[in-house]
Amino acid sequence: MTPFTSDDSMPAEENRNDLLILSRVSAAVSGLGDLDAVLKVGLDKTLEYMDGIQGGIMLLQEDSQELKYRVYRGLSEEYVEKMRLEVGEGLAGRVAQTGRAMLVDDISEEPGAARPHLIDMEGLRAFVSVPLRSRERILGVMNCASRIPRHFARRDMLLLHSIGDQLGTAVDSAKMYEKLNRSQRRYWRIARRLIVAQEEERERIARDLHDETSQVLTGLALKLQVLTEMCNMLDIQNERFREVLDEAHASAKQINREVSRVISDLRPTLLSTMGLVPAVREHVESALTPLGIEVTFDLHEIHPPPPPEAEISLFRWVQGAVGNIIKHADANHVHVSLRRNNSELRLQVSDDGRGFNVDDLNLREGDEGQGTGLFIMKERLELVEGGCHISSKPGEGTTATARFPLQ
Ligand SMILES: Nc1ncnc2c1ncn2[C@@H]1O[C@H](COP(=O)(O)OP(=O)(O)OP(=O)(O)O)[C@@H](O)[C@H]1O
Ligand SMILES: [Mg+2]
Image (tube, rainbow, N blue to C red; front, side):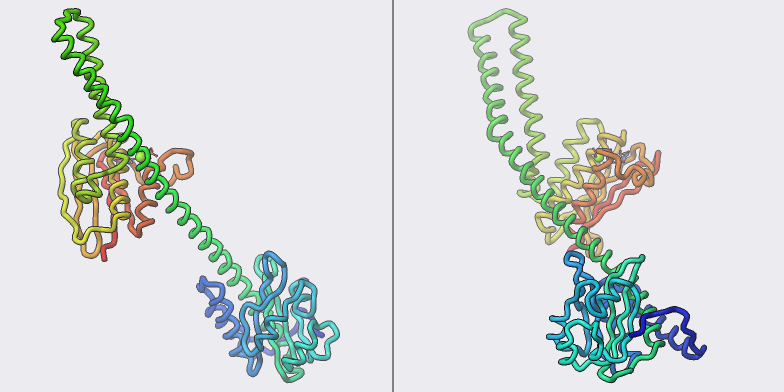
């Protein structure tokens, strides 16, 4: 058995050749984000340069700390399935434990080898095992075997060891990338569920307000109206009494209007009955005109219209943009446009207000409760495959643009 030592010297020609192989394997796996692709390409490229051998890559399982084949070539399924090793068990297990490569001339003669009957069944003789290492951690091992004894030279082991180091780094990045992808997918699932839950909750509150609060308020306004009429009929002259009654009546009507506005913000009925254009127009006008902001439109119907979940996201996005104008812009004029631009829908809300420095938004990212509006607006659209961006400069107004791909 020959463990790896680094003082082996090689002729310059062989050295150059090995460097070339190493750089080719490394180039083949670099940039592959998918773990299986990294392993398959890495193994195939390695075996390509080592004639007549079989092999495989075993990865250390994060939960069980067991070594298990993830990719292999030229080995039987039974061998691969049954050859699971604890760290420290057999040759590969020891490589995973110590991080030192091993070369044996004939593994069938090796007393330390695990599952000798499997090795016999497979007819393996010469055997090299090298660690896959990244950031001082062992992630697995690459095993190469030949059915001819003494097939490998120390030079092969050195080369495989270097390839193992390259593959280790690629495997590590691919694993991190997979983890990132998994948490990204989880995040999207949760975000989507939250948005659906938020819509359902809005719908429920709107229904309660409409069926209960609004009805009671309408009844109250009517009763106050009747009281006023009774005052006239009964010829009640008390000025103060009449004043308070008129005020109460006016208040009831005003609260009712407010509640209706809240209901239509929560549940844009126009959107489901008439579509995006009337709903956007109505919302922008009713929110901005009473504040003395002049509003102009360039709204075009889109045929066929985007799917309902995209329409609601676009509508909520407009609500967010309008909310920001009210809260921050101090604008005199707002222009809203909706049109088809090649294969995408483009919705734009521009104001001539005070504007702001868009770069500052990134600096504030992570601040509790600050500036989440734009973030949520963007996420909502991305969930329906759309997107948005905002352009603004201090003193030059703000333009928010939403996009949605049309089939
Ligand atoms: N139309 C606008 N005019 C001027 N400033 C704006 C406009 N829209 C956004 N901003 C600036 O961008 C910041 C971030 O906006 P965002 O909607 O994310 O957060 P917010 O409105 O401050 O809070 P929230 O929406 O979470 O209640 C705002 O604080 C404001 O400074
Ligand atoms: Mg906001």
